[in-house]
Structure formats: structure tokens, C-alpha cells
Image (tube, rainbow, N blue to C red; front, side, top):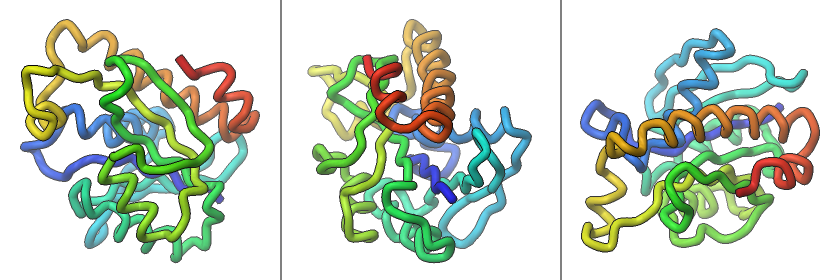
Length: 184
């Protein structure tokens, strides 16, 4: 069993913002698999199969900085191994459209990832980081909650598709091969 976690913020106000790229990846993945999310108290989830592995796709509805509490519920419910968790999230330090897979490590300053680490008690889970870039003229808090510019739309569409392929590769061939193939 694998747990795929897309990080983002709930609600129309945050839909399609940079901080919600994790939601966008899982929405596209669920659509490609013909899965429908069901809403629970503090998360949305659906289950299916990718590369012969049973998967649960979940999107916390607790807002980014408190994502870990919802992840802990699903993590405990399904007794998932930490190394079978893949967290998909935005990364300011990667250019828009870039993708990077990491096996484990610190939060790198990402408050959603930090919340997951604190709530499940380990850093030993896989991350699929999606680059959103930075704009030095816009405060970080405002930038991550902004929508992608028109000139970034093609990059975003492409990286969302590549992230789905990377997740399939992680499940089918292992994280090392996925890192070698997909890391920018």
C-alpha cells in the first residue's frame, strides 16, 4: 500500500495557485485513473492501483501549515510504511516547471512538509517537488498564493503530467530509477 499526498489549500480562493500544485498533480492523476475523490472531515481521498500497487491518493483540507494532522489520520488508518508515502508539493527553490524527487530529508522550510514530518514522526518519506520559482519583488506569502502567469501555463501543464509519470516510475521501478530519470 502506498499513500500519495498532494499538498495545497482547500477552497476556490486557492484553486490553481502555486501553493496548490500538489493538489493539481493528484487531481490529474485521479482523473487519468478514472478515480473520484470522496470528501472526509479534513481530507479528500480515493484509492486505486498504479503499476500494480494499491494506492490511496489524499489531499489534506486542513490548510497547508496543518497538513500533517490529516496525513497522520490516513497514515494510521492504512498502516502505511513511511517509505511508502509520496508527498507532492511546491518548491520555491526550483524554477517553474522543474521537478525533483527526494528520498527523504528535512522540510527545506516548507511548512506543509514540516507539518507532515511532525505529525508522522519521521522524515523518511519520498517527496516529488514541483518548481514554482520565485519573484523577488513579491513577498513569498503572496507569491505562493498567486496564480501561475499566462506564460507559465504550458510549463505547469507539462510538469503536472511529468509528475504523474514520475510517481508511476517510483512505484513501478523504484525511487532511484525515478530520481535518475526525472530529476531536473
